[in-house]
Length: 232
Image (cartoon, rainbow, N blue to C red):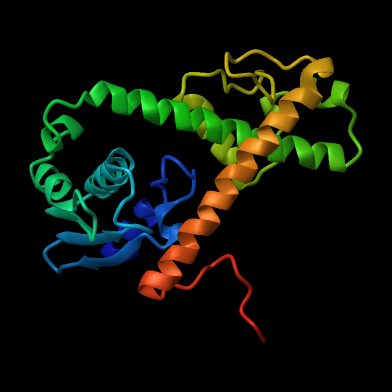
């Protein structure tokens, strides 16, 4: 695998913190160039120049860190294009700085709290999709809440659920409940309908915002929406 291919694969593991979608799937990676010397240059373009600076910084910093972890990589440059705080974010990234370095007076710790909040929302939405699949297959609520992590089927939603649970410090070992509340406890069968309604609402919000971002990128940069079927 070429270094560029490795870099793109690493970027596919970087998620928009608000939408919980890879920045590659959203079309946020404008270019990725790897030199013969092992240096990597990435240009990011977001859906709008007014994207919240905290989210923009998180994505750019995460992208830089993901590529920097590749074996044998040289210098890594991640530049955020066409953003109203791009100058501040890019200057901090060049030196491996923090959000507080980009925006003096801001608390980097608050950024971590924000990331954790949206990871929990993403977990709720993805668990809801997994639960919907079981119910559609004919399982009853009592059977669903009795399942364990070891019973989870393979798939992107399940893999992401487990990763998110690990990231926010919730139990994710094989014997843990397959579906958990925000505190990590099993969900009682009688509370499953209410929990699922909330999960569906959060999931709908994430999907709608993701669709809006793709539409804006298509209008502004001509980036095709990968979720749309290509007409025959």
